[in-house]
Length: 125
Image 1 (cartoon, helix red, strand yellow):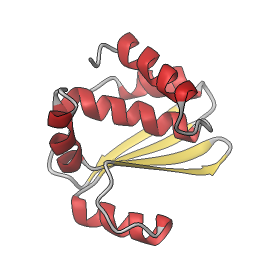
Image 2: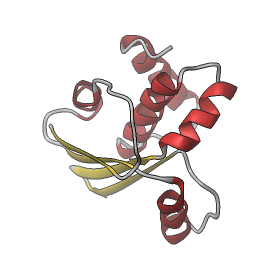
Image 3: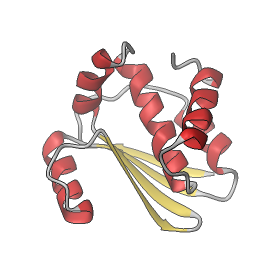
Image 4: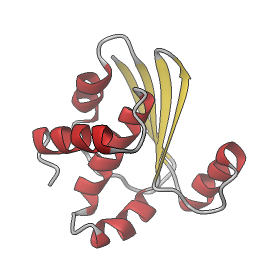
């Protein structure tokens, strides 16, 4: 598992990103994780998804073994309160959510079950 973490957002929480990514994606995946501000997130969402809101997470599979995840910490912080989670734990959940999308999961019961399993395993409740 090769993962690079970069950021243009001022801050982001320290979590076991490498361990989580390896657990979900396996040994032979290359991942770029980027923490970005709201302006850049909205621009990416508009360009790639034709949506005009600030997303909390975006995931883009580049091929079968490479992908990108963009997380917007400011948006996650707002949403964490509504989910009764700390911002740190909610960002961990969003990372898991993005990884599962890269793995091919779609929203639904199967994805929710997988998210719950990993959230529990990494104590992100």
